[in-house]
Image (cartoon, rainbow, N blue to C red; front, side, top):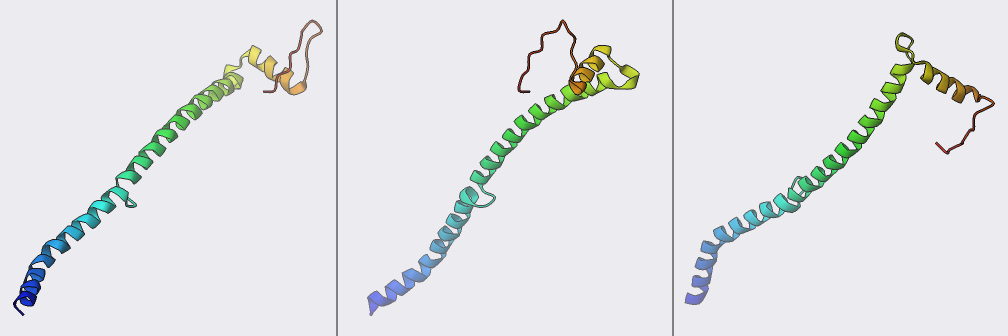
Length: 104
């Protein structure tokens, strides 16, 4: 009977540290693998980097198109741009011109 009492006594003493280790392990696991853990943070950082690259590319395209639109505004009309757009829209060309079609 002495051994059984000794085992009960030691198990009662060990339950606190074992429970503490389990709680720390649970939080450590979720700090790395959880929904808002370290791996999720790295994944979000990668998505942010990719989105910034796309934003830079789209910003450059937008600047290009804003410049072209600016050249067609009545207060700042560029005759060359007007002629280019009129020829493209009306499908006109001069007799002495060579027209090269592209897939743009």
